[in-house]
Image 1 (cartoon, rainbow, N blue to C red):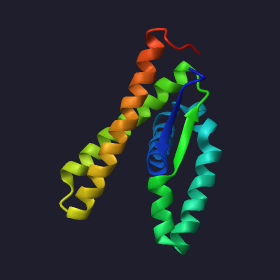
Image 2: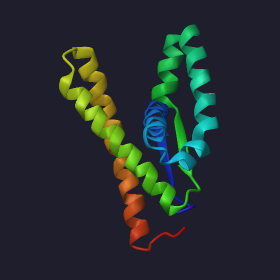
Image 3: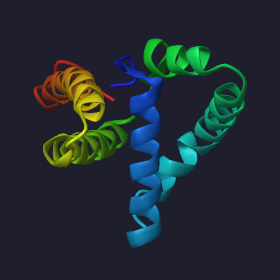
Image 4: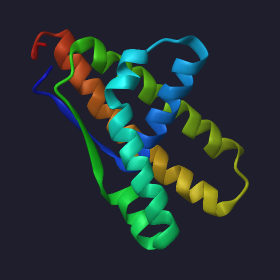
Length: 136
């Protein structure tokens, strides 16, 4: 699985890290996974905060057009990421259902589409791993 990689849009990586942080705070589970990515996330988040204050268009571009690459992970780490991504996807579906704002609905649809694609790639990685096509 160390040869597998998944490209996540920056916004989705941030959503996943927020979810992972919440999971760690509530249950003390997945702390190792959170710690593995915490420095990258905090650096990225600091850049995003600075950029949002200076240039809103560049902020949006970075959130939507740039990616974070998940790679060189063991099978158990991929499974944890898959679980986090499923939780984020379900949360996005819920937000889309309850939103009454047309702008929010458009953004929710975009995010749901993107997270569905990423989750599909993650599922293919996990399927290939479980069938022995790729190994740790």
